[in-house]
Image (cartoon, rainbow, N blue to C red; front, side, top):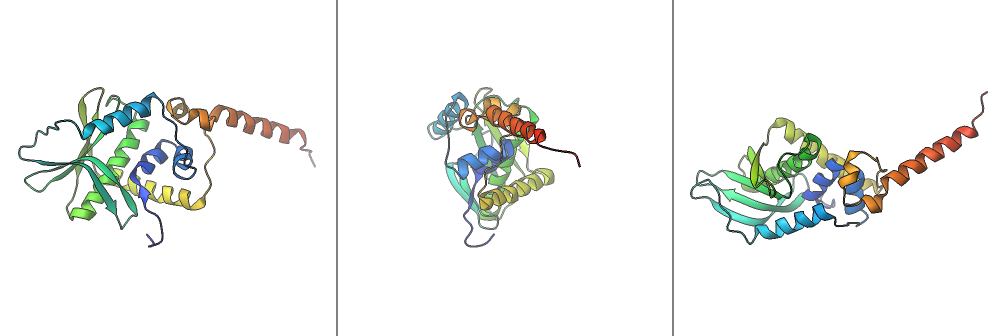
Length: 212
């Protein structure tokens, strides 16, 4: 990372893996719209600081809303909860609304965000973070996430992709797929309308194509 590059928010990695256009709209154009999913998520994150957090690890010290960063990768953000176990283990726990039973293509967004937190914590405390957890409010259960080589590689690739996107200054096109229906930016992004316009433009172009 160059010294002049702005650090990437950890949330941008989650947004990018979900949809590159969503990442561009939020982190380049400053657009954001709440829907029922984001409202619940915000409420759950706000609740973390107020609850009597309990961990099964005896004697663990718990830090809430812990600022984290990685100078090496150019990342910055906060961890909802970090447990510091007596044996020296550093264990991040990210709070999410909804159930832990998510489609794999949705769950990976949360996994990458948690893995990025682990990378930051490793750099800050010079200690390996091989595992963390995602706590889902609806099911009130943790989903353990192994921060293995494959997830680390996916996370590093996402950091590179997000930095390239932000440096380009160009918001990606709407893709109009299954992710769009639950996206809080659906009304702003209008993926169906943009997809129709692209289709119409392509059709018009063929009307004026002549064979040699």
